[in-house]
Amino acid sequence: MAGVTAVIENQGADSAQTRETLGRDAFGRRLPPVKQRLYPPMPRDFDGGWIATLAITAFAAILRFWNLGNPVKFVFDETYYAKDAFSLLKFGYARQFIDKPEGIADKQILAGNLDVFKDTPSLTVHPEVGKWMIAAGEHLFGMNSFGWRFMPALFGTLTVLLVIRTVRRMTRSTLIGCIAGLLLAADGLHFVMSRVALLDIFLAFWLVAAVSCLVADRDWTRRRHAESLDDGTGPGGRRTVGRLLLVRPWRIAAGVCFGLALGTKWSAVWVIAGFGLLVFAWDLGARRAIGVPRAFWRSVLVDGVPAFVSIVLVGIVTYTATWTGWLLNDNAYDHDYASKNPAQGVMKVVPDDFRSLIHYHQEVLAFHTGDYINNATHPYSSHPAEWPIVGRPIGFDAVNDIKPGTGGCTAPAGTNCLSVISAIGTPLLWWGGALALIASLVLWIAQRDWRFGIPIVGYLTCWLPWFFFDDRPIFFFYAVTMVPFTVMALALVLGKILGPARTALEAPSSRRLIGSAVVGAFVVLVVLNFAYIWPILTDKVLPHPDWLNRMWFKSWI
Image (tube, rainbow, N blue to C red; front, side, top):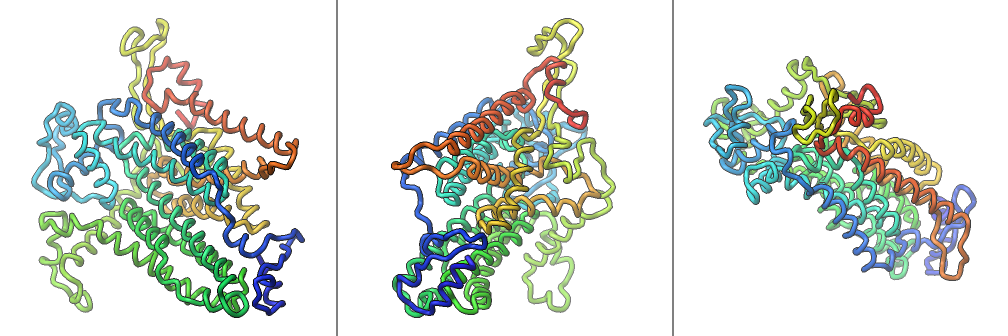
């Protein structure tokens, strides 16, 4: 990019021929024309691209919806989120449920008795978007195990579709996009999280949706920069590119998606910050590529300020709107705080409802950082340093000591069976993904290939912040937000191994054949690895030795 900029600025002319002068990169390689680098053409297989996309999405859907209602019970933290969601659906705000004796509310719901809520409001320690999404499934299919798992399965499936189309846009290759989607469909952690009523699968979806919008915005903006090289006046088409691009619809859509992600879990804030910096770098690179003088300061004012409005302010407004149910219900937890505590100083200008909402947030923050959570322990707690190598997965459900001849146990006499749901990533995918992320970092820095920055920024902002909270119980399933960015990195690196597609006039090369064999073998092995661990992802009854064969390390038990 620096080579292109230097050529344009040194020429100092404004003709189309000059603006398409070929430069060389830092390695001396000839670069394509500026317009082509700004906006490479999309693949022309529009129909075929969508057929392949929908086929892989359908494969992911079949996996995730098959036998979704089993086990017919609350799995892990479904006992909180499914009931909170139904409370939102029924009352508009979260209520406490009967808890004496322990588990009585769950038993009554499974027996068909839904009258399990007290009159007192409940402090829920996560925002409400994910629970409203679970509630939508309960509204459609009832307060049962299929109902509260329907929306996680749907949005887990839709994440596969988004990843395919996003990587396709990034690489201009339907094949590479489909590889990314197939890998995501075959990841064990993403699969399990798509089949339980927890919040993290929704967080992953909204983050991927926001990043997809940012990639689309990058294309949208650069296409207009490329067009300005034909109709602008002055070096680099300054008249056109100097206009304030205040209305960038894809970037506003990204702000909405980021707001919904934040409204699912607060950990989205780190991803927003990371991609905010990345999109500024994209805008700065585009202006430098077309020879805009003082590109940095122009990007700060012309791109940075509108980007802050579109992404951050729109995200904040969206996040606030997700609390509408709480704001409209006087009986919601802490809603009466402002009426009991008169405002002081500048807080007098804040409406009481919002002052109560601020206090509610302080209560939630105190829960997540207070002594109670910091002193808690859990047998499945996992340090984030272990996540990239699947060091300590988490068991969501287990039934041990199933006797031979009962419950589907076919073990020989003297050996019992068990059934488990283990939230474990497909090992080969995660281990290969860790190597791909290292390669992506190198390629991003060494070759200045913007595409590799997306999985790096996404992965790191979903992972590194947890190191600051390792004094409290944290779990491997939080890493489900890292999975889409892992498969993006894998697909990009596999694309490098595969090599460029040959034209119709070129003879097949051994380079492409070898690359195809390596890529195909890796994808097949990942799918086979997923099939091998399938029984411990889906509560299948297994003889104890068969279960141990899938527990490759002591830390997995």
